[in-house]
Length: 230
Ligand SMILES: [Zn+2]
Ligand SMILES: [Zn+2]
Image (cartoon, rainbow, N blue to C red; front, side, top):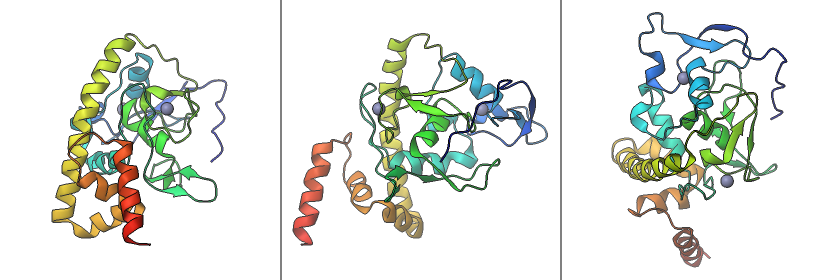
């Protein structure tokens, strides 16, 4: 999808808009709306968190309306070390080889967005339609540390701390997505089937592994699968 062109007077007006994924940002909202910039549709509080270099991978900070989507999304990401690329194992358009994940947003009729954009929304915050670019050059990468939003300054206050923090929270997220997949399989087999449809091999692999994902295991699993179904 074409990038949204940043206007010269970016973020000069604020209006009320729907909740963002971070539940703290809707605390105290009486009318079910939160402050958003009227051009990018970014959440004002998310933008200030981003400017200060704060990010989060914690499902407990996610608003309940977004939690299932959050866990579904991260179930498809190969979460690795903070300085490695995190590959996407969910849906991709075969023609353009671009990633996508279903997530309706209020400003557009589009029903799906690129995986890195969703990763950005769920970690750095809801930056609306601000353009993003990868510093690692990998357009499929979902590691939030590898992406920058245009139009907003990023002050990485303490990169070292951030990495330690990310290592801790990404391990937690591994377990949470694992638990999510197990629970979905048990209680909502139809939805589970839908998840499997995106990438059966990957979902089955996630379900059978209680360790952090190793790509070597995945390759072995793929080889085995091919061996079984020649
Ligand atoms: Zn927000
Ligand atoms: Zn990367």
